Length: 118
Image 1 (tube, rainbow, N blue to C red):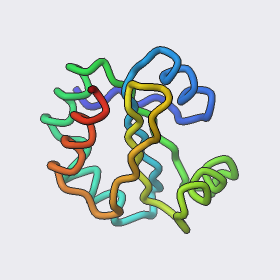
Image 2: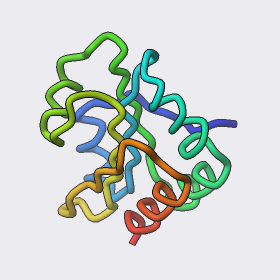
Image 3: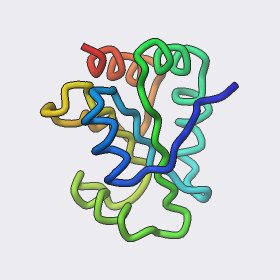
Image 4: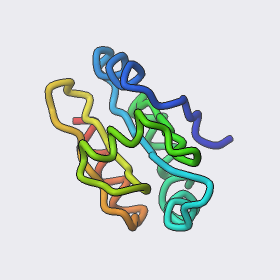
């Protein structure tokens, strides 16, 4: 009963934006301890799952375990040297994505989702 993660790709982001859906993007890696902590405390939690469902948001996961080049380019685009990188795209396709801090709290994620749904 977890989040229905879809694989991240620029095309997946484009499609969700064209459909006017909020998007939660989690760039993560199996070796990333901060990513695991964020997932456990602030992403894979019931309140975030409920909000994603309520807002008809899409959740995309970018797996950086093997240093995917497309994800490297996305990290650079947002001035990050590595993971974690969590983005929340508003349903308004012309609005810029919100770049969440490296260390998350449930409130940070929930507030970003609320803003994205407006």
